[in-house]
Amino acid sequence: MNRVTTLLLCLLFSAGAAHASSARFCDRSQELSAAAQDRLLRFAAVLREELAASDDSVALVSRSGLDLSRFHIRYSHGALAWRSTAGVWSARQLYYACDERRPRIYDQGLAGFALGTDDPKLGYLSIVRMPPQAVLALKPALLDTQRALHLLAAQYSANAYAYSLRYQNCNQWLIEMLAAGWGGLPDSEDLRGRAQAWLRDERYAPQPVEVGSRFWMLASYFVPLLHLDDHPDEDRAALQLHISLPSTIEDFVRARFPQSERIELCHDEKQVVIHRGWTPIAEGCKPAEGDRVISLLD
Image (cartoon, rainbow, N blue to C red; front, side):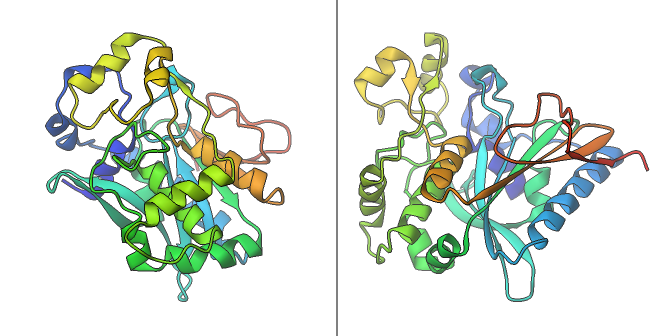
């Protein structure tokens, strides 16, 4: 099984989750038609062009991986894109290694990042460009292998609580990496705990995911990659889970560095839309006035 597929496990709130095992999700694969593959590769090329259009060397990137629209969530998976001295962009992120049954840190090309989607007919990508002072503080921590690994939890949970050391999902690793860099936290084995303490001090507070039904809460009893034992009792009772998501991380970045810029990309079967600003693209990849549209029918 390739690593692109395992990245889809970043969040596991899907309709069949309560009736499947983790092995089933690890075995999942998606056969893309030549047209779908071409469309996604062209979409990835637009992402690459947008990243290369500035002098930035690190940017926050997110994608719509799993369909979480029932929870009003567009983006499921976030990563930090970084540019090498040779000018090549990669996305550094946490993924779940199914064969090893543990999370890992993985650098992936932008094409692979764009291909990690449930729906090849409609997809979204988000880029947040950060000011130079944010990048300068973050990049040394991001590229410090030992520090990145000390931020990696031993156990994965797709719905990990934002303030627990028991589990971790991909977005939780990402926000803790931001904390390590922006907090100037030196490396040590207790780095995760100090990163979370820094986030509390900086008032990082993910908006709760409204689960809406106890049926979804029961999924944790059937799917090994979902857990509730790290969430506070009051959150479970209220059916509200505080989970790090790309949207909550973007909000934190914007609050800390208001000069940050956001670019949202989407594609359907006919076009790519490039939208600039913090307002979201309309559902269904509908362009607004001022958006750039690139035809995929050429």
